[in-house]
Structure formats: structure tokens, C-alpha cells
Image 1 (tube, rainbow, N blue to C red):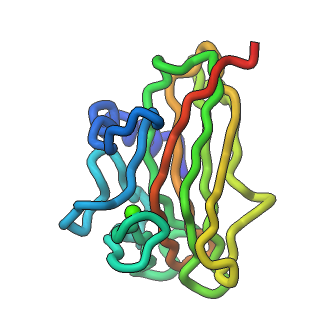
Image 2 (cartoon, protein in one colour; image 1 turned 180 degrees about the vertical axis):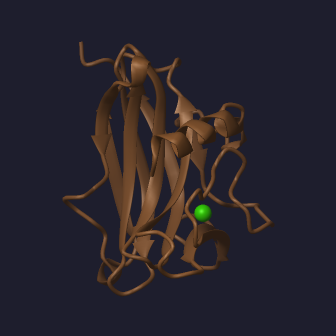
Length: 183
Ligand SMILES: [Ca+2]
């Protein structure tokens, strides 16, 4: 994804993350329960041509609802992305842990969660996109975890889930926990 797309998306997201369900254990949580429209929760988006967001209902890792990132038009992008950007001011200088249930719904498609720390002046902080441990179709639902440091000069923490190699993935119960500083 180009920096320009990320930049535009940040403007959309600034006010949006408050819509994630309140839970004292989590800084943010989105569990896809009690949603009725096939569009991303407020503050989230699918900025990838050829991919769409929809709601799944039924047997889910958490509750009855989950999210689906679905490829509608093949060949428009090498991967699809469901993502948001969270202002980092509340937890700069600490560690963050992102957890979610993810599943590849299509053979030869990988589901990969990711987290990227953006710093001032375009500098890049911690980044993990599960390149070394993609979730395969045969794995079923997998609880993915990414944990890393948030720099003291961090501006945003971008998080998301990708469908790699043109296919569909499902997502449920994204949770963010802020951990104490390493120091
Ligand atoms: Ca759920």
C-alpha cells in the first residue's frame, strides 16, 4: 500500500476508533457483534481495489459475528487489507500487543495480521506482518498475536489483516492491550 493511501486513511480514522467496544481490559476491541450493515466498523476500512468488507454470522471464535475480507475482482491488487490507524499519544513509550482470530477462507490464500509504528518525520518504528508465520487455509481459525514497542516519538500505530495472494479471509475479536514500558 502506498504511503499516500495510508496518509489519506489517517484522516478518516482520527475520530473513529472510539466505536470499538469498551472493555476495561483492552485499549481497543472490535468483536463484530451487534453490527447489521455490511460495511467496516467506524474508523476501519478496506482501501484495496477489488476487495470488500462483509459481516459473517454464525459459529465464530467469539460470539456470533465476525468480519470477512472478500475478493470481488481478481487481479486488481496482490492482496487485500482491512485496517485502521490509531493515534499513538496514549501509549508512546510503552509496548502494545495486538491479538485477533484470523482464518484463510480460500486455498492458496494466506491470512496475515500486521502492526506498524509510524514515527515523526516519516520514520518507521516496529513492524511485523507475520511474513514468517502466515495462516494457511488448512489451519482454520488461528489466534494471532503481535507484540512490540511503541517509540516515544510515535504518531500512529497502524494495524490490519491482509488476504495475501488474492482470496478471502475472516477476522474476529481484534484486541489491543497496552503493556508497561520496557524500562
Ligand atoms: Ca465476534
